[in-house]
Length: 111
Length: 114
Image: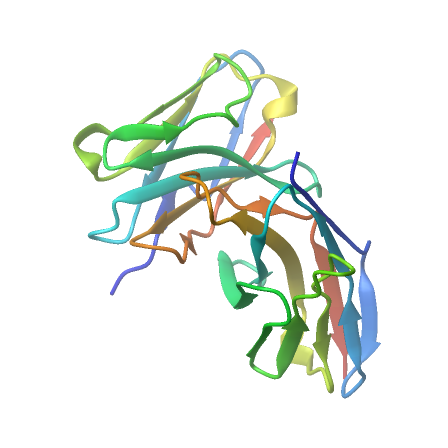
């Protein structure tokens, strides 16, 4: 069974540009989560989808971040426009019930 | 709010040494506690968990006991191997709410030399 996959693995963009990160959860997992780790700090929760609905988006930092999960399968996280402080590793996780399975992350660098 | 504090790294050990990585938490209720591990180039993997006070989670020679009186969940291993080199994250999740988000500590990098 394939695990959680994320694309791209790395992205380097300039301040003010737009970047879209993609997450493909494990097939059949209704729950999908986004987290972010900034420069050696703690991993912070961004939001949680149940199917295509946002269950909890309390961790989204500001309105430059837009997450979608059309059709309840894969999810995208768009940052527009990107700022320097958005640099970090973005993790996606999915779950059927309790255990969350994580992807390898996307390392975003904003110059 | 809920938070997790874990010891700063890196922790550098020789093979077969004893490992302790400290983790304490602050929570308004009774959380479940987790240790995740991230090996180089890979995603986070659940290492072990405990869901109530005095529970001991164990896996791959690692152990951690849920101590409610000290709000701690320290990770231990009796004899580390080079292959244990990774970043270890302590985390909690409140189980009595509809929200399933994990709250993580900052991570502790472990380096094991032969």
